[in-house]
Amino acid sequence: MRLPLNQLKRQIITATTVTKEGHIPSALSILDIVWVLYDRVMRFHPKNPKSDDRDRFILSKGHGSLALYSVLAAKGFFPASELEQYCTFKSRFGGHPDSNKVPGVEASTGSLGHGLPFGVGVAMALRIRKIDRRVFVLVGDAECNEGSIWEATLLAAHHGLSNLTCIVDYNHSTDRALGMGDIAAKFDSFGWSAVKINGHDAAAIENALRQRNPNRPTAIVAETIKGHGVKQMENNPAWHHRSPSKEELESMLQELA
Amino acid sequence: MRKQFIRTTEDVMAKDERLVVLLGDISVFGFRKAFEQFPERIYNIGICEQAMTGMAAGLSKEGLVPVVHSIAPFVVERCFEQIKDDFCYQKLGGNIVSVGGSYDYAALGCTHHCPGDVAILKTLPGMEIVLPGTASEYDKLFRAAYADGHPTYFRLSERNNPQSFDVEFGRANVLKKGSLATVITVGTTLAATLAATQDLDVTVLYYTTVAPFDVETLRQNCASKKIALVEPYYEGVLVQEIVAALAPAPVRIETIGVPHRFLTDYGHQEEHDEAIGLTPENIRNRIMNLIEQKSGPATGSRS
Image (cartoon, rainbow over all chains, first blue to last red):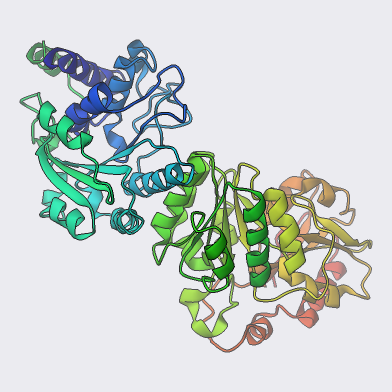
């Protein structure tokens, strides 16, 4: 697992150097989770991405788009070489994902607090249509500042949406602004089945993602590191929205070789 | 109109299994039959319009046809970004049905007024905006547009015009032909407009769909290039459409509607109509002023 993930990390970092745009640390904190979802847990069909018989993944923290793009490319939704166009004028791949442009992207996100309510609707629709597939929504810890997240959390529990799993990327972006404290306890008190895991431990991620409470939605609060895997970026706020210089890029690629 | 909304929705739910209704904790008692008949397709969501709207977009993404319903400020202004990002940007269809636009709930104060809904929704590409004037017009317009793949806003009112017309989604009705000016009237301002114009030599165009705007009917019925625009929300919202439709001809436009300020008085709708001049007498005076003005290249005249 280490090898493909390092390849994806190199892709993610390199993609930002063309237009000097992108949120690298936010993509690296979720990459292990998104990879395990697509590699070991979800059912999907790259050649028929809209098939009803698929699990749905919604990246609510849309600024982590590069993690999603790199995993979708690795799984055959589109050629990885296209990511070199990331954020260029006519590219399909923007700083935030567009569901009308990128195969496999279920929701156009970017403004925070939209993906989870949208995912509640998708999960409700699957239940109405009697399609037994799962919906995974990934939100950020700072995104959990938004009231709409907690509106959706109440709704999902009230309606017993057991086909819905919300993964919280707890990379502590929010600590400097509005501390969220024990997010798992909050989900639990809102009526979800909640667990805490190490968001960079593939076995723990897989195990948590496979759990499904028969009556409640599931929350997985994943403790993660912003910029995971690149030492100078890890937990360094200066890198939140920045692209590396030529020299920095070389040293990072070497670190990930 | 609200009773018709319930009747129409229940009837369409019976015929179209895709229709799913989300209520913002209003009209719940009215829908009691639907709750019994279609428990999987109608929900009282509670007081959380942002999540309700996002959720509706998620339903739409999976091929269902959502209807969300609450009072206008809550289901438009509170969740405007969800309408923009979750519906319009993603090109998902659905229906937002409001009650209490403008100052229908006059006594409840400005938090419950919504004269700005049409203006802000009009900024969203792909958004359809419908203002029926009567219950039966609502029934016809909803059936025509509810599943057309666009997000559609149906603005219901507590008031009804005295007479229904054979309205069609996306098309204006020519109610009267005259030569001195063209009066464009929207939804429930029709009653006062007809009273104001009954003995005037003017054309009256009745719009129940304002987005998309019916350009053709206006072009064919505006030889005078003098237009009185009578709207039940903040005045002047359709000026841009009118000027663009008639370009490059110069036009004179008299805008009559809700003035751009908070209406901080209470009382009844009719008292507000009086106070802001949405009365047959004032509308008639404004149209007379327009008719008496010499033709020329001025636009956007306001008194």
